[in-house]
Amino acid sequence: MIPARAGARASRVAFVALCLALPPALGSADEPIPAGSELTLARAIELAIKYHPARQAAESESLAADERVGSARSSLLPQVYGVGQYLRATENGIGTATYLPAPGITRSPSTGRHTDSLTDSFDNYAAGVSVFQYLYDFGRTRGAIEERNAEADAERARLQLVELDLVYRVSAAYFDLVGARQIVKVYDEAIMQRTEHLNEVKVKAEADLRPQIDVYTAQAELARSELHLTDARNAEAIAKVSLDNAMGLGEQAPDYKQADASLSAPPSEPVDSFLHRALEQRPDLKMLEEGARAAGARIRQYRSDYLPSLGAAAGYNLRGDDGTSTNNLYAGVVITWPLFNGFRTQHEVAESKLRQDAIRHMIEDLRQTVILQVKRSYLDWRASIDRIGQARQTLEASRVELDLASKRYENGLGSIIELTDAQRRYTEDDAAYVKAQAESSIARAALDRDTGTAHP
Image 1 (cartoon, rainbow, N blue to C red):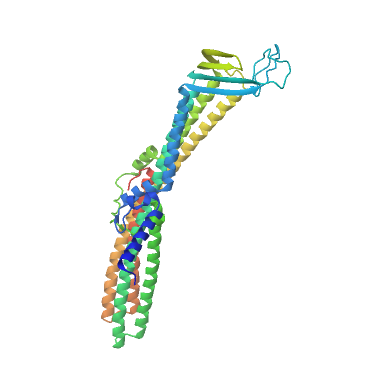
Image 2: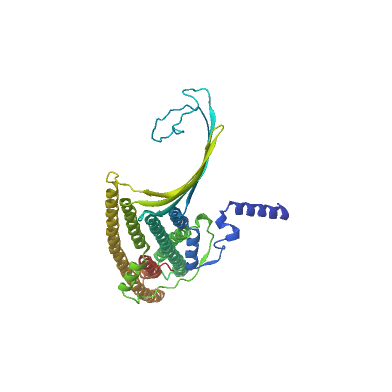
C-alpha cells in the first residue's frame, strides 16, 4: 500500500505536470470553463471570440493592415539617411574624361597621383547625412495612404465576418448539444417505461393472463430503445466535441452543464426589416465596398504620374583621402516629372478602373446573394416555429394515445402490438418535439448570421 504522504506527493506532481502541459491561454490561471460549471450561450460565444484560432488569425491580419497604414504615412515625414564608407584604392588619374555614374565606379574624374599604377593604394573615406522631405506629388502619396486605410477597414470587416461566423457556429453547436442531451433523456425515460412494462408483462405471462409472445415483444421493444439510447448518447458526445471545437477549446474543454436555453419567439418583424439590416451590417459587403475604395485610391496614385512630384532635399558630407578632406553642404528643391514611360501609366490607370468596375459588379452580386440568404433564413425560421406547434400537438395526441393503449392492454382489450406501437410513436414524437425546438433556435441563429447581427 502506498503511504498517504507519498500518494499526496504523487498527486501534486501529476497536477503540476498537467498544468505545465496546458497551453498558456488555457492554464489554471485563466481556466475558461471550470469543470462541472454551467455554460450559457453568451459565455460560449465569449470563449470562442477569445480562444478560437481563426478569430485570432483574423485579428492579427487586421492589426497588420493597421501597421501598413503607418508604413504608408511614413512617406509624409522627413526621410533621413546616413552613409559612411572606407576604401583602400589606387589613385590613377583619367584627365578630363567624363562618364555616367554606374555601380562600381567609386571616384569622379581627376588628375590622380599616378598614371597607371596598381601597386600604390591610398585610404579613401566618406561620411554624410541627407534629408528628403515630401512636399507634393498630386495624389500618389496620399492615395497610397487612402488605399492602405481602405485595406485596413476591409480587414476589420473580415474580422467581423469571422466573429459573425463563429457566433453562428457556436450557437448551432450549443443548441445541437441541448437537443442531443434532451433526446438522451427521452430515451432514458423510454427505457424506464419499457423496463417497467416488461416486468408487468412477465408477471401476467407467468400467471397465464398474457401469451408468452407478449414477453418477447416487450423485450424486443426494450432492446430497440436501448439501441436508440446508444445512438443518442453518441450524438450527444459528438455534439459536445463540436461545441468544444467551435469555442476553440478542443481537447482542453472539461465537462460542463448547459443553462436552460429559451425558445426563440415567433417573428415580430417583416422580412424587409431583416433585409434592410443585412444590407447595412453585413461585413462581407463592407469588405467589397472598402475594396472599391482602395481601387479608387489606386487610380489616383497612377494618375499622379501625369504630373510632377515636389520634394525638398538637404545634406552634409565629408570626403577625403590620405592627406586631404573636403566638407560640402547642399539644400534645394527636387522636381521629378516622368515625361514618358512607354504608356505604362495609361495601362495602370485603365487596369485599376476595370478592377474597380469588377468589384462594383461583385458588390451587386453579393447584394443579391444576401437577399436570397436572408429571405431563405427568414422562411426557415418561420417554418421552424410552426413545426414546434405541430410537434407539440402531435406529442400531446401521442400521450393520450399511449394512455388509452395502456388502459386497453391492462383491461385485456388491446394487444401488445397496439401498446408497443403507441409507446414507440410517443417516444419518436417526444424526440421530434425536442429536435424541432433545437432546429428553431438554430434557424434563428442562421437568420442573425445572414442579417449580420452577432448576438446570442
